[in-house]
Amino acid sequence: MATNAKRIKAKAQAYAPQTKDDCVADIKKLGDLSRDRVRAQADMNDEIAVITKRYSERLDSLSERIDTLQGGIQTWAEAHRDELTGGGKVKTANLITGEVSWRQRPPSVGVRGAEAVIETLKKLGLGRFVRGREEVNKEAILNEPDAVRGIAGITLVTGVEDFVITPFEQEVEA
Image 1 (cartoon, rainbow, N blue to C red):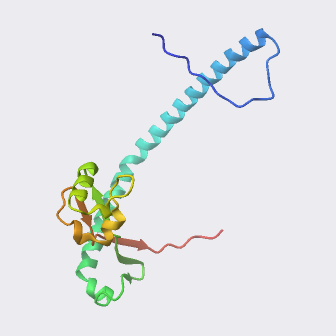
Image 2: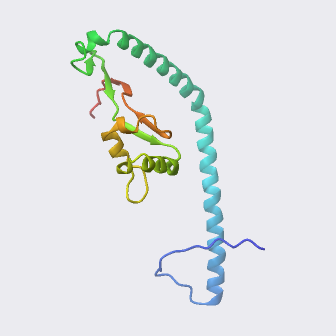
Image 3: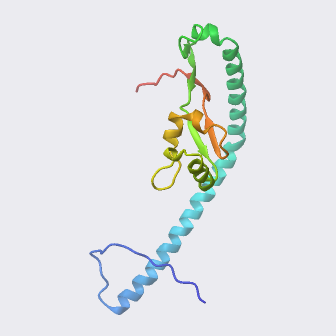
């Protein structure tokens, strides 16, 4: 079976060929232009590849240095957290050149094997955690986490904390 030719869809235009020969010539032009566009795209991608290769080693080196500094800053800040946060009274500490902060992520529910979990919840009389269209109601579980602890396939994630470093930056005005 032959492969189908690529169809080109477009909204109606003001231009229209006036004869069959004009139409044949326009189809040839359309093919030529389409191939030119593909070549231009390939040329563009080739140039992007050259640029990416030229900067990749430098970017990798910078990323490695950034990761090292972030790790060191986090280690120091964690060791001095009580001092920086006033014993936990604040979540952000200003260190003149930037801030470090600790943010609590909102609780979340992960469900693996949704059908089996739904069946288990119903068997245990916990149908209130199943929505009408037969899906686990994660919001209800977050409101009553103790009721579903230990049920296979349900993972409650709480207390995940992110560490954030925000360097201060000044924008130059022209």
